[in-house]
Amino acid sequence: MDRVTRRELLGGSLAAVAGVAGTVSSANAEGDAASLGGDDWIELECAMKEMVLDGNRVRLRAYNDQIPGPTITVTPGSTLRIRMKNALPPYDSSAWNGDHNVPHGLDHTSLHLHGMDVVPHLFVPVGTSDPLAPMIKIPPGEHLDYVFEIPENHPPGLNWYHPHKHGATAVQAASGMAGPLIVKGALDEVPEIKAARSIPLVIQDIGLFPSEEDPDLWTYEPVQNAIWQTYGGYVTIHGERTSLRGGFTTGDYRLRYYLLNGTPFFRETHNDRPNEDTNPVASQLTPQRITVAPGEVVRFLMLNGSSDNLMPIVVDGHDLHLIAMDGVNFTQARTIPAEGYSETDGQFLLSPANRAEFLIKGNATPGIYQIRQIPHNRQFLDSAAKIIAEIEVTGPAKDMALPDELPVPSREYPLIKPEEVSRVRKIVFTGSVPGIINTVVGGDYLINHAIYSEMEVPTVVNLDSVEEWHLSLEDSHHGGVEGHPFHIHVNSFEVVSIGGIEQPPGLIQDTIWVPIDQTVVVRMRFKEYIGKAVYHCHILPHEDTGMMQNFLIVDPADRHDHS
Ligand SMILES: [Cu+2]
Image (cartoon, rainbow, N blue to C red; front, side, top):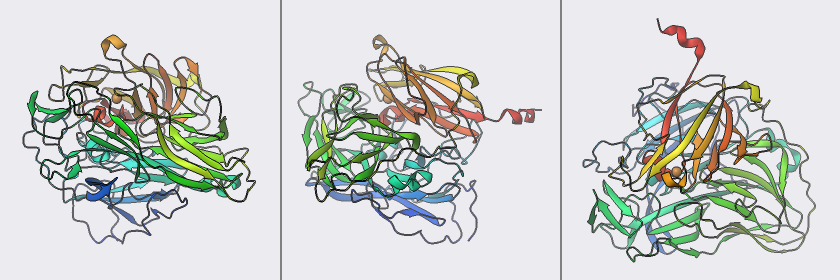
């Protein structure tokens, strides 16, 4: 087989490609499913998918006809080869004015491996350091081959993949395009963890509007420039009210489902009375039930793959032994007791894109216990309480052990020392509604007062240097009225403090919730890769409409090139 280099460009017709690897499987609550992976090419094809959700006919977007997408499993030191095929139908962007911060181009896509410490891969060609490099956009009917060398010391854990084509990310992800990516490694060999069943909990949200053509079909296929007005429940184009039934939204849908491993557990409907109650009407659906024996230790791998919903999580009746956040494990489990957890953050806080891995030991008392999201009002709209799944403790008792120690994730250790910080930056989420910059969308979503620009690089960092970033919102008089999740590509960061409260060392994430009126301090080392990458808000409609910036990792040793 021809070796395809990482410089392989869009849509070329490649020579023969080896068959698709192994079996394809879905994430499911039975645990330990087989998955895609190994040395062969993995083929991901995105296309529309019609199915029935909660009795409604829906048309979604899916990878390999699965929601969530197939689980991809990799090991450190291996090569991950993905052929990303785009089989989405054409979309009419002819009325688009060319402003990249107006949603557009729903038929183009790209692939992001969220949380993976690999070569930057959003710009053409993969790995480029050209500040003027454009974003990858795979046109309908074409494909792009991605080759990722997974570092030998890549931490084991739960990451995920989703599209990242600016202007189409929110629509594609909120109609099904996301899947788990698991790095297997030393953590999986810890005897107590090896003995435990591994159960993925992949949470997604699906945003829907009635189809313009088919009254019985729900989908998310807004025409160009159509904007859904959450306050009022109608659709405008350039500010003019239309009779369209669906539009791009920055916060709400006529109908929304929350899925666990592809099955809905919660429904929201938008109330149609113009200018009245703006919060959606929430309905709990029948949650899935996971059976656990008393005293059995099970490992959960939870992903908040929703487009915008902050999720403080609680597992009733169980001490929760957190072993990893965002795919980087702690050196010892952190036990959060069943009682006395934080009223705002639950036993742990999952912002959109965060992952948590945790162990529970089945309660000695048989019964039904809930895994749930506690309600909050820290965003644009209230987020209701949700039962994500139920744990049914039943059957003959076991007495399984919890691990005392976990392997050191050597790519991230030793931890950064304060004296290593060479530069401090402030990153402020700013903006306003109504917007004065992004008038088509009607809201401005900015970072440091700037809207996203594909060709600008406001931040340049040095390879192998350490920086400390202070993340915050503007005060409430200037639009800082809801929190935003900060996410950075390529390297994870250590969380130093939140609202002035020091965090225990070794909390390593790639995404973190930045609350109202609090500064979050993180430190990161730009470890191995140079190139053009991004940081952004992981509320996807915010990202798509401008709350993102480019940054460039440069190797100071290369600077003599300027002659
Ligand atoms: Cu945001």
